[in-house]
Length: 304
Image (cartoon, rainbow, N blue to C red):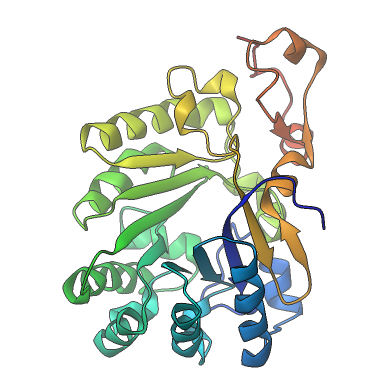
């Protein structure tokens, strides 16, 4: 793999296992078929290799990293080799247990990315196909705030689907109550479970754009940050600076069965049409996911 951008973060994926079964999960097929978990000895090698990239940010992900028994040890090891920012990408359910939340914080984790996909138990639990998960995740947010013993960067991620896009502003308003500093959101990526369920969960980008805009306005009024993924510039007029894909830093992913550059992945499998060449954003816009165009068309996208 050739890395053409400075590395801003290394993500160490601990295993293809999860305690949820999200209807929109883009790697759901891997969770079902491989069930592969890295050995801790391999994770230590990944952490050492990550340090050699020059980044001070490491992230542990999955699947769901909090159900991997050695996560706390991995955090301690990352801190011991000098990582200043240690992130956990999580659905947050394990943090509903106070002792677990305290152990992870004490080990050195100081950045958390919680996945929250609804503003009610009924909606969130349906999307993640796990009853009780909404209340557990919110309790996890409470516990991180309760036991944080220094500067902690609390973030959330919301996948936008046909079933939740209309309440995206309500989801964010709820999460602002939990001292979330940065929000990450974007339309579902049509792979894995999302591909299987595409007819019921994939919304047209032109339909979700107004809800995204209202959400951004709310976040900005609250003095917080937001990043939007996978939306083309022509649907983000006035909100272009929130588009996450265009940047000069890369995230490198160490998975159990591959290594990847997220920046390269963002540039792959996108498509444009001839009219895009006349758009003022053509040089920086990555286009639209090909699988999305196969499901809908280019008709909703107009060059600026």
